[in-house]
Length: 139
Picture 1: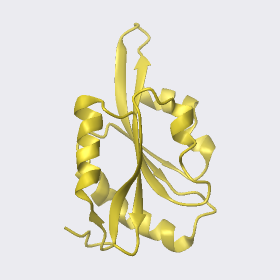
Picture 2 (picture 1 turned 90 degrees about the horizontal axis):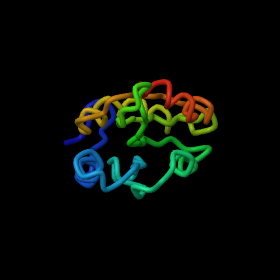
Picture 3 (picture 1 turned 90 degrees about the vertical axis):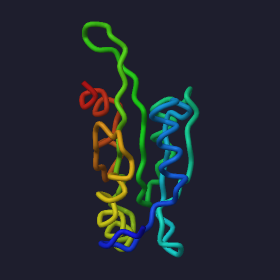
Picture 4 (picture 1 turned 45 degrees about the horizontal axis):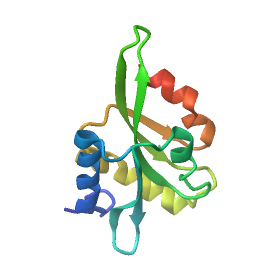
């Protein structure tokens, strides 16, 4: 079903890959892209379970918008292993205005399709999604 605000549909593969990340931990990350011609959100890439946060962050283009999900593992101060699923709305300052508008107007509906997001971040440059930011938002 298309998003009334922006007319964007969500490809079934987006939901299936997210469920695999959440339930089976098949992936560490997923990067999503809006295909403007097809008017839908699609999976651009997935990260293997061994992928590091730095490798994931390197997949986000410097001058194009993306949505991304990252399954972040961490230890609590008590030494308990936990994980948080981050949703990142990546909208660099150097991306096209039209692209920023489409991603902004489609974000909430797309995020609702991904049941299980625990932390949301919006970022316009790499410092806003640095590992230190992720660590501070995880706990």
